[in-house]
Length: 77
Image (cartoon, rainbow, N blue to C red; front, side, top):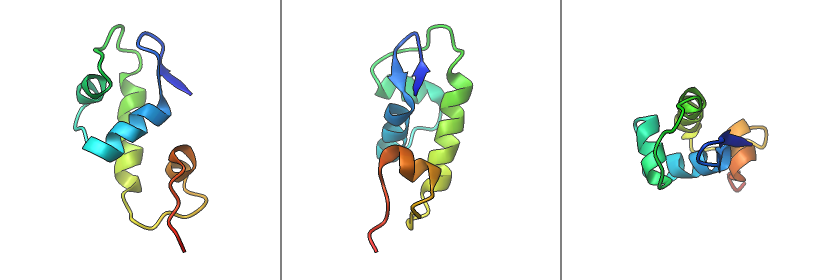
């Protein structure tokens, strides 16, 4: 799903950034993706995705985990 229409990036890209570099603010996500906020409408969605990714750092993904489904990460059994 496209999260930012101005910079054209997706939820998967935001989650990839969150899993790799652990940004603290939506502004850091923009910088990691090589862009800057334009209209700012996506900031809340980015924050929600960041919160999902942080909650996802459980270490034991279940197949029904929503973040694992997006990123394709499922723990090996």
